[in-house]
Length: 247
Ligand SMILES: Nc1nc2c(c(=O)[nH]1)N[C@H]1C(S)=C(S)[C@@H](COP(=O)(O)O)O[C@H]1N2
Ligand SMILES: [Mo]
Image 1: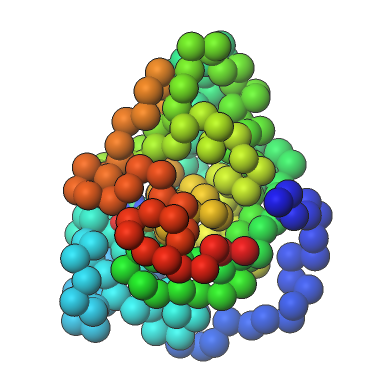
Image 2: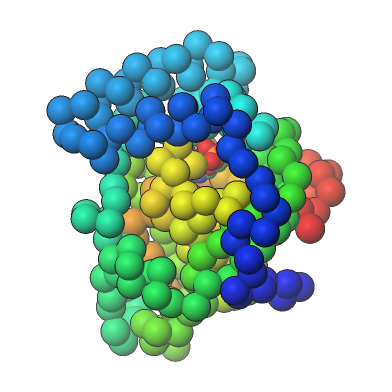
């Protein structure tokens, strides 16, 4: 199960982003250029994405042009852009040593790399997608989890989304606080600069724009789980679906 390979050659597959995708992600990155530009650019982009969206109930969605089959999802109509200057990830709750990580601090920790299929509960699947980042277990160990703790809650700087895992699930080696996807820094559209990546579960568990990790004494269902998705989101064994596992 533990096939994460820290230190893999990040660009070894020679993959290059198609031009269309570069342009799109460039637009998504505009927020970093200035506060005056970002809200306009993002609204324009998101309504464009809305125009090509499938009839999909799960929030603002759209097929990312040349995005390798990924769809853009957000339950909010706009999301602030965060980067090295203002991104923070807090770790708190039932821990001995609450922490507040900057991006550079997360990058300085040991990194793990996983290459698995991605499966959305609405049916789409993207094969063999590299994700790279810090194992969640590394951050939990550093924080010193209380013996009373049973679960972990995740919150997001979109101000709305949340997720949860049991402590056992959270400690799996295939659960990452991801900084990179497809061998590039995680872009805003995919939840950058930092998202959760829960490899063996449906992609709704992989909370985008991650900003808070709170250790709790019980599982608190997340955004979609309050709206009917299974809390234990194992691919192929939940949500009434029989997809092949994302190995
Ligand atoms: N913050 C946040 N995280 C989220 C979502 C969301 O709407 N907001 N949607 C989830 C769902 S249902 C899916 S399928 C994936 C989509 O990730 P993508 O936009 O990178 O394709 O993000 C998950 N994480
Ligand atoms: Mo999804």
